[in-house]
Image 1 (tube, rainbow, N blue to C red):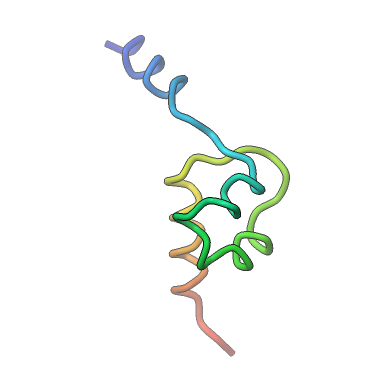
Image 2: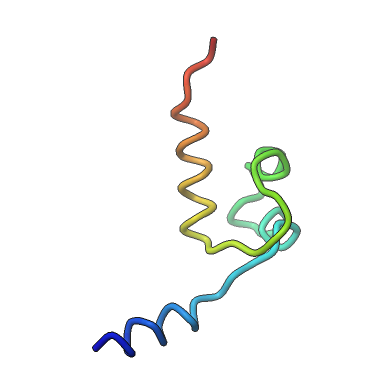
Length: 60
C-alpha cells in the first residue's frame, strides 16, 4: 500500500516558475508568481496554496 502512494507522488507533474507563469491557469497571477516563487519545480497544488496564503495576508 505504501508503494502505491509513493508511485502516485512520483508521477505527479512538477512545473518550473516560467511554465506556471506562462500557463493559462495562472495568467492573472503571473506577477504574483514572479514574486512568490524561486528557482525549482512546483506542484500545481503547492502554487495554489502559496497564492491563497498570500491573498489571505494582512495589509499593514
